[in-house]
Image (cartoon, rainbow, N blue to C red; front, side, top):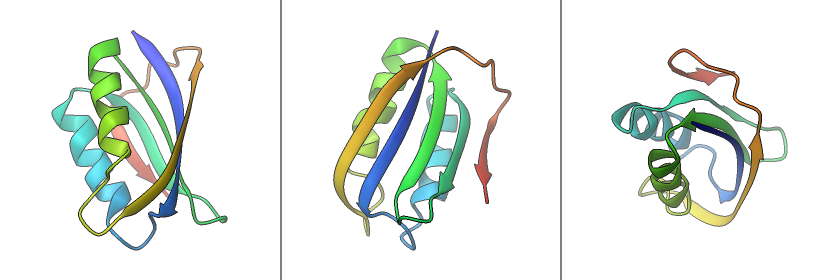
Length: 89
């Protein structure tokens, strides 16, 4: 089990990134949350098996069809044992 934070920058707000990220995380069996940041980036905390988290990070590098991802930054953190995956406001 691994927990990472992800900051995705580029054209990632207003393109269904949060909703698509939740769907992708749920399909991979991951838990955590996603939210928009005031600077225009998307912030995600996600945890689960290493292989699934790695697949999720790869998905974040592309995002949904209308996104234009410029940069993805990740950092490993302490596991928080989230329940479910939610969109935060």
